[in-house]
Length: 221
Ligand SMILES: N[C@@H](CCC(=O)N[C@@H](CS)C(=O)NCC(=O)O)C(=O)O
Image 1 (tube, rainbow, N blue to C red):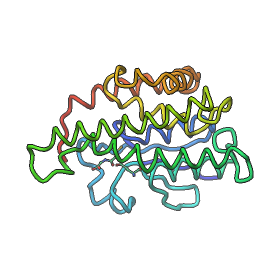
Image 2 (tube, protein in one colour):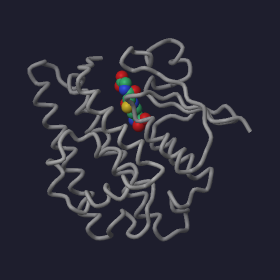
Image 3 (cartoon, rainbow, N blue to C red):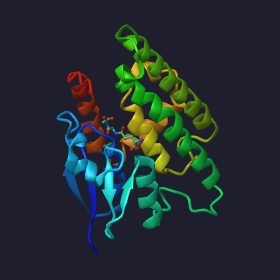
Image 4 (cartoon, rainbow, N blue to C red):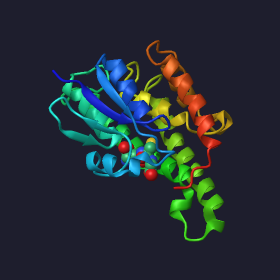
């Protein structure tokens, strides 16, 4: 079987897909798309990626898969990683899907606005307002997740670790200051457990450093 090919990049959420590959023991090739140098806007990449966003994945059969939550779900289901994604008849499935789509549909877009506030305003004087508003929207999402976690600790599915814990941890790493999440103990407990997973430990440390570095780049495209 050919390998999967992941078009990802250092400062991108392809890191989350790589964590799925690692957790699933799935082999893949990686091609770096440097978003700082705008490689995601190059004609070559746009031939591959329908959205011009990173990541994009090619299956061993040559199908293009895009949108990170879709890629990650696809990998888990295709490889029957039921320890990461409950299967359709599993009683945990409903809670899993609800939380998974909440993160994908509410938290991720808020964080995207936080990182690219200048794209969402008409007047440059509103950039800082948009950044702060998006940060607050993200924290509000973490608050909801914290409440959900309080009911089923320590993981989102109670005793059972899953892909959603990985997603929550990945995105929480993007919140600038630990203090902002301080009032969410159930969330912090879940994150600290995920960070201890031997196969993810190094990745999550690297991710934290990468995030700090990214902030110094002042990207404006
Ligand atoms: N909804 C997409 C968003 C992808 C996305 O925005 N990726 C970022 C990198 S993390 C990107 O391509 N940024 C470049 C840009 O938006 O111009 C997904 O979840 O895959």
